[in-house]
Image: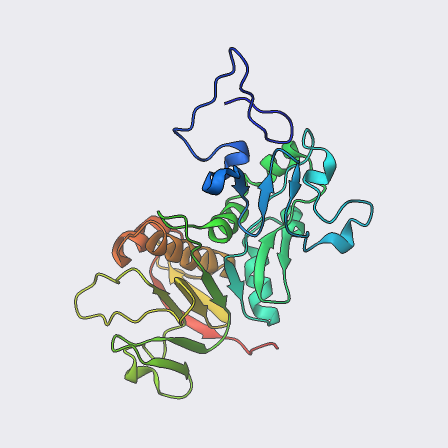
Length: 288
């Protein structure tokens, strides 16, 4: 397909458009409902005929010189809008630091933590070339996958991450639970009291004997990691600390693989890679 700068498709001789693929301008899905032909940008619907969104920009206070409904700072040649809000995190310093640690230092500026707990990648005011380069960062790309994740029917997949000793979810019988690892309540859910990481998904675990514990209502995938440091032993027999960012990346990748790609636990765990077999975990104090 070929487009005018603001996303309207060209229907001129030699520029015939095809409706076979609904993911068109900037990879966003064209919504044909009621003949509106708007693009679904996750949080807002975009009208390429007007070059405007139909809902106000949440970050409008940053761009007082622009309309509340502008697209790409009114310059779609240099800028594009990226929107989505399907990764939520707990409001504490450990959690924020874990999410930021996934990306390289220079790319952490694009990660935004919102008041409602959602995480977004904010490239407002960034040209397309710089954004494309930043998204080569595997950690930033993982966050983008979680933020933009949708199921096969186009429904948003919601993920949750928290760095704490708390674990929340839904038992196989439908009852909800909330425990702390120091409460000895873990045995009631089948979760190990000493398990430093818990990874829950709406996709079945797929391992015989392991209860199908699901994330708390409203989430499709959830990861909880206690603050601290994981250690593993290398081929030389020496025990070494594993960078916490590697552990966080592994668990969130595993959650995405299970929830979005519908892998069972063993498949998702192997595909996530990166941490090896741990030997011990040293817990650290919690920070508010």
